[in-house]
Amino acid sequence: MTYGDLKNQIAMLLIGDNDLPKDEAKVLAGLKFAYIELADISTPLKWLTLNKDVSIMRQGPGSYWVRMPDMPLDTTDELDIDSELTPALARFMASNIAKEIQMKNYHRRLGSELLKKYDAKVREYILNQESKGAYADA
Image (cartoon, rainbow, N blue to C red; front, top):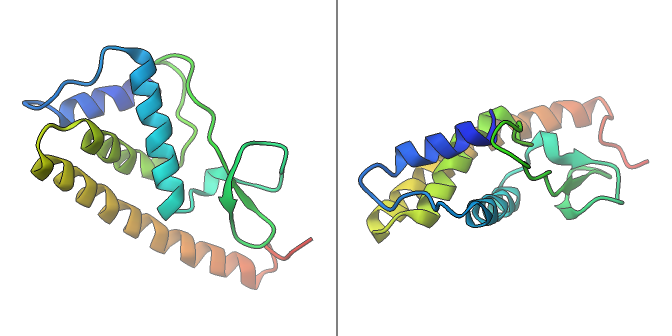
């Protein structure tokens, strides 16, 4: 999914509510904030790295780290996130923009439910990979 597609999804989620900010710097700041929130409660597989020379957010499985994703430069850039996480990302961003507490909580709850489903799949995958020695400390 491109950054432009994400912005369109968020705008759609916010119909009848606050608009997506027109200031691109604010939207990018919101994206970075949402990325950090996602990494705090989920393990995006695309963000796993063995390279400690990149911006690290936290420890991952085995000797892996969860890196900070690359930020898009324009609307045609592909997002640096697992495609299954883009709906949760859109919900988290919408929750930070929405006007009413009820709508903020609604988007946050739906985003969190999506993360739980995704993380269950990731846990199963990582356990399977660990049994094969993929995440063994080097």
